[in-house]
Image (cartoon, rainbow, N blue to C red):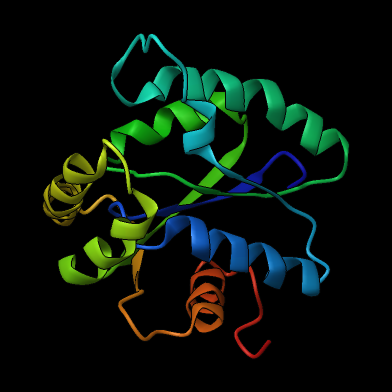
Length: 177
């Protein structure tokens, strides 16, 4: 099974908590001594001018270029944050990471919670677009059913418990850990 690479994608609308849960999942995996690499894949898309919507192709090329470096350094699994709105879109991940066994977790939260989270994060010129896009994207993701499982990350949820549930549902942690 050395040819397989577990790949956990934390998906969800803007403001659902993908990056925050990713950070906590990194801490839980590290504490458990589980070798891994982790990326917020949005950071592999930013450039101007964009050559495609949302930078998906550029992100996949960047991921294909950097994954072998992490694998050679000892990472045998990868956890990422990135919106997944279709199962068909996962083929690009399989091409970027040969042997990828992909699990998609969608974080859910109410529109009000997502927008409250976005307000301080998006204080500038993108604010109104981000708030509108969050609600629109939540509907798109609900209709797409592209995830393997969902985890609630609404307001008041303990972030450590949310991340632990994500990792446990993906079979990356012993559920009793």
